Length: 406
Image 1 (cartoon, rainbow, N blue to C red):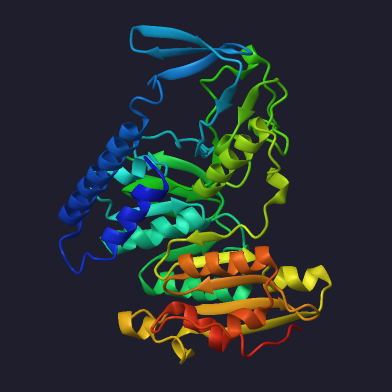
Image 2: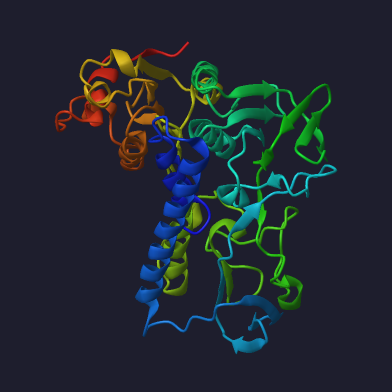
């Protein structure tokens, strides 16, 4: 809530509404609005704890398997508990090249308060976080160059959809470079040169969006004997138990999918672990994900490539959003970019996956995910009675054009 999902989406929304206003002053105003929102949400959340939870605000570290020291300035307190839950999250990963610790090089947290708005921004990393920031800063008025180390742009997507996303970004002024392995970030005084194997890109600021690492550096896990994996994430079983009895880890810090809603579900699993309930991590099915481009890009389950590799008999339906007559909402709001693709098991007619790149896809994907969890046949979605005009109506039309996946 403080540095990731909510504040970045607030900035993304602000960027989409600039409408020709002065980039620098508008960005400053947008950041101030972002900070006001987060402060309001923090006050609300803290108010929920009053009278129920003792909140110790400081830096915590283990001093033993069941003792934790909390330090805030000159104050220090040690707490002992038979049950300890670690939920410290993750940080942006560092770029392991010379100059990556320079003053003009940012991560996804610090770039939100970059001052001034960079005229030229280089983003290192073409994953989903990089894509969101690329479109956002381009709309704020920066000249954005996106560097992807791999030769393939967004390999998690089907090739045709990835190409369309790339075309959209380039149409908004983003320069996309694949096969760009950064070797150094050289500070020159008035800018920074981002150097790859064969090119140099000048920038006022650099955003490193090259993965994340666990937020465990201050915890002194060795003092508690808590085991970690080769990446530094706390090792847990499917009931979120560490190797130390009574110590649990939930959310990003345990190395699972790094989404807020997975952290929330981890807490449901943990509740059942502590109260002899049935939930486990391995019973999760059809977990969705959304990249908040405009329009948003959402996925759940299989892509076409994965469906082919599965050896199943599969049906696929694909339609451009602009051509879906039963879905007038995109035309009403003036956002007809995108495509909807749904994959179906040809034998039992259950849904295997979907890629939804369209307005409201962050809502539609939850609908598809629920259908997958319940084992609903695709006909239920195709023949459903949905409100009008709504994005959900797309299923009435798209699922009517299924054909064998070749």
